[in-house]
Structure formats: structure tokens, C-alpha cells
Amino acid sequence: MPLDAEEIPDWRARRREVILTAAAELFAGRDYASVQVEEVAKRAGVGKATLYRYFPSKEELYLESLERALGGLEQKLNAELAPQHQPATVRLSSMVSALVDTLSEQLQTLKLLGGDQSDLADRTRRILRRRSQGTATALQQVLADGMASGEFRKVDLEIVPLLIIGMVRGGIMQLGDRPRDALERSVIDLLMSGITTLPPFI
Image 1 (tube, one colour):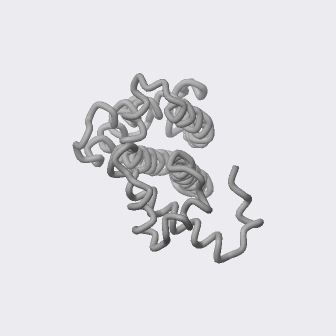
Image 2 (image 1 turned 90 degrees about the vertical axis):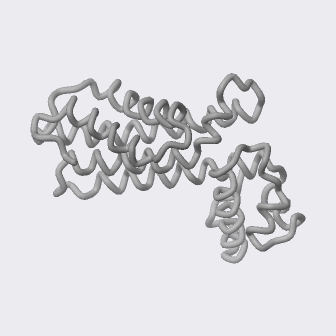
Image 3 (image 1 turned 180 degrees about the horizontal axis):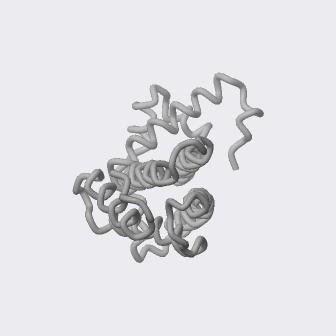
């Protein structure tokens, strides 16, 4: 397991972050097998041996970059819970946008899961399941806020957040390289037309 950021000297934390950023950029655009450790090291501006001091294997680097991306998504979603002065429709739309953006970048990761029973795929699934709980909780909260304010009709707060996540993930898997903004608009349109008591937010 990686050290807590507070336990890592600043320069090591910065270098680790640079490596993870380089890895995330490469893994987001290509499948796992085609990304080479040498490429990640070159993009990060470090030697291969240096990279391995931070991440003992390509698999660990990949899983850490996935954790980082999904952790960033949780931060974005939780940030949307703070501005209570904004309508729930606006906050929910922003959450869907963040969900589409992050999971679209992880498209190759999602494709990796199809029928693959390898240890890597299994660990990837576990990360996605665990992180989905935080995403669902944030969606649940904004839906509850919207119900309390009268913006949303009464919905099942256990099921609907999971349906939103599933709709986005399924859309990404099926649409492939089609523009993500088309998926984003469609999900928001469908969602708002189904749950709002007011004219849909566009």
C-alpha cells in the first residue's frame, strides 16, 4: 500500500504525483497492454529505475492511477454538495458531467473488465465497486436535497443513484469513441425529465 502523503517528503510526493499524472494520461487514451513503463517514465521525466522505486510494477502503477482518478471524481462530487444556495437540478447536472468526464477517461479500463478474470481485472473491479459507493452517496444526498426543496419528485434514494452510475458506465461502453458531450446531454435530459417537478435544467 502507498504511504500516506503526510509521511512522504515533499519532493518525493511531487515526483510521485508527476509519475501518476503521466501514467493517467497514457492509460486514459489506450488499453493497458499497449502502455509501456518506459513511456510513462519518459513522459514523467524520470528513469525507469526511479519509477520502479515508487511503483514496483506496471499493474500497481495502473491501479494507483485509477484510484487517483476516481478519488478526484469523489472530490468533485462532494464539492457540489457544499453550495446549498444552488438548485439541486444544477448540482445534479454538474455531478453527471463530472461522472461522464472521469469515466470516459477510464474507457479502456471499463473495456478491460469485459469477461476478463485476471487478477488485474478483479482488482480493478474491486476499486470501481468501492469508489462507486462514495459516488452513490453524493448523488443520494443531492437527490434528497432536491426532494426536500420540491425540485424532484419522490424517488428511491437507494436505487436511483446506482441507476445513474450504471447509465453513464453503460453509455460509455456502448458508444465507444462518440463525443462524450452527447452522452452527457442525453443522460441529463433523461434524468431530469424523469425526476423533476420543474422544467428540466439545460
